[in-house]
Image (spheres, helix red, strand yellow):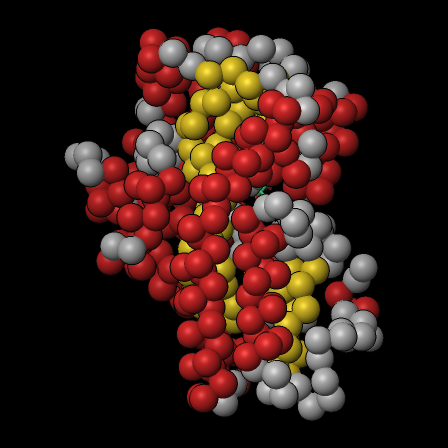
Length: 322
Ligand code: LMR
């Protein structure tokens, strides 16, 4: 579907005279933390703001194949809300590269705690420098690696080609591992894995299950080497155009839905991990020595991004001296 056809699309949630809002994303609508959060947001808006505003959600890259296309579409008023990964936000908010540093957070609890700190808030606020507004963090899960060969140690991926979602940090750490990377839209990953265009990829349990990546890989290794989270954002001009009362109601709904749905992201990660196992997928877990080998191999990338991200942010997020 093209952006041009959006306005021609009839939205059953919209009545004549209502302000029509579009939310575009690339993941599955059901069984996925972002898909379900977007639907929950639209449901709340369509119920609570009935008569004033309505929202339509386009999941599964139906509207835009690439998250990148969203940035211009949002400034053009074609899309009003989106939640790309923090990695994909980095052209707009370079500080968001923080979240791509490997082994920065040991688990999702540490990540969510950080998002409530002043430093976490400052990364959302940085989006407004470019005409956007960061509204909140939406969670997905820890990142794992999968490939056509069993992965246990850093040397197992040497010489492979991995798909990347668009992450300067990822490009550097895969280069350090001797892995070639290809930046590719999420919608193309399954076919690229199935045809052997790439050998592997990194993603969360919810993405790996809902897009069946594990079915065209030797297995998934629970590396937990990174986090996958999103920035829910909009355009500043769009928010400024709203009647102040409507804007306040909308912001309150966003806050409530964000809080409620982030609580489910952890559960969905476990559910989707189990569904992979139930379907016969292979999951490899690492022992302490194997995990340490990954930490030793990937941690040097932090220094290379200290200037781009800011040593203060790295220190605040890691609790370690940067
Ligand atoms: C990816 O491209 O792998 C992810 O950013 C997709 C998503 O939105 O979770």
